[in-house]
Figure 1 (cartoon, protein in one colour):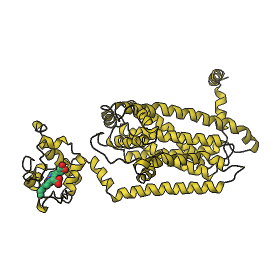
Figure 2 (tube, helix red, strand yellow):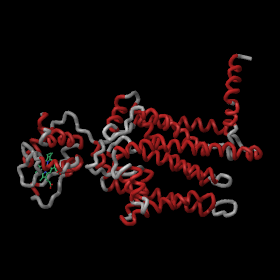
Figure 3 (spheres, protein in one colour):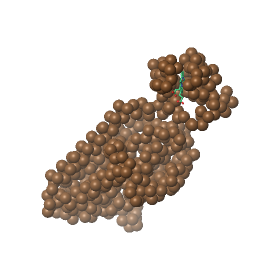
Figure 4 (cartoon, helix red, strand yellow):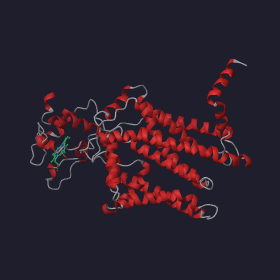
Amino acid sequence: MGKFSKFVNWMDQRTGGRRILPLFTALPLEGKPSLRKTLIFLVIALTIFEGITGCFLSMSYSPGVSAAYPSVKYQMQETTAGHLLRSLHAYGAHLIAALLLLCLVERIQARGYRTPNEIKWVLGLLMGGILIIIATTGYLLPWDQYGYWGTKVRTSILGSVPLLGPILKSIALGGPEIGNLALTRFYALHALFLPSMLMAFFLLYLSTTLFLRSGKDEISGACCYWPEQAWRDALCGAGVFLALYVFSVCMPVQLGAVANPLETYPARPEWYFRWLFETLKYCPPPWEFIGSVLIPHLILLFLVLIPWIDNGARNHRKAVILVSLLLLAAVCGLSGLSVWQDVQSGHFKEVALWEVEPEPGFDSEKFYKKECQNCHGRDGSGYLETTPDFSSEDYWKSSPSEVRLLKAILEGVDDQNIPEDERMPAFASKLSPAQAKALLVDKIHWFKPGDRSGD
Ligand code: HEC
């Protein structure tokens, strides 16, 4: 006996390892191997990938209101492949959400929920739900405007639930407002609680796949996972990860402006909650819970009950397909409508203003003298009755948001109470957003009392 097989024997006697490999190769497969079945494999592979990239991200992340944003910035700018890592982690989550939706459609279409798969179906829904909550809790962590205000909207929806709402909200946030405790809680949920729950449910799911079906499939001579399905999974997996990598390199995710509770940011939910966001628009305050609680729960209830609506005894297959298609159409339609409305109202342009960086080298001094000084004055206090006094403390006390000021410069202020020749004109034709931002940072902010000392 060679040294290696001796070692293998030694290990086997202590671990039972030889029986593990056959468990994998004999993994039963329902029906024929096919590319559609790779969907579930892709979700699992990406979830593991998110776990690994998440571990690396956590090595430089610091969950605290004042430390979170700089720690993410540091991670992106200073650590090896840090920006790439964060992009992979963020895009990976979007990809999982998209694949989950495809999985759901595929399973319903293939009747994957029928006897004896009812429990696996429910477990699958549960794990999908947990994955989505993991993704949602992740948005707050970088502590930028997008995550902060998005979470504010989500938790206020949670708070609108009748009776239980306020309690659930204060449990999630650890207090009345989004602060240090909320951030720490979200981090714990995102990185510890929910992934552990997911793992436990996955073990259950795996054991039902392994042990429940193996007896039956051996008799019917059904396919095994290995090697027919395995190479399909491997090939698709390689393709998807390559695409994810290329996408992350070409379009790395950005870090928005740091969270500021005083400046209302036009928050939008992630794309997979757009339909809910749109639904809520049609539910004014006292009826908010219809959109935020009732409708999502009815949909969930329907999904959970599918195996019992369409089974051997009651063949309501057509009803299941019809309701599913209607739901899918409603979700797609509402999402599309929501995006379209945002395009119409200039929401995306406004969001871009929040992210704009001042153009380096722009001659703000010269531009101000030529175009602004006549009204706003040499020292920013303004020559006209109607111009704001940028040199007074009272003006800055109201903490006007950067975006309001940028919009005023680019689009003008159409104030009917002011004589036409004194109104704030629009400068969009003379200034790019980056130049307007430079003007704001170099000139307008410079008038701020207290800030002037440095110059
Ligand atoms: C014709 C006079 C005029 C000129 C020229 C002008 N402004 Fe104004 N600006 C105003 C008036 C009047 C307001 C107040 C508008 C209101 O609130 O109705 C204003 C408002 C603003 C605001 C918004 C303040 C706020 O709190 O919302 C900013 C920022 C600003 N101007 C910057 C500039 C810059 C930069 C320039 C030059 C590129 C400029 N303005 C040129 C008259 C002028």
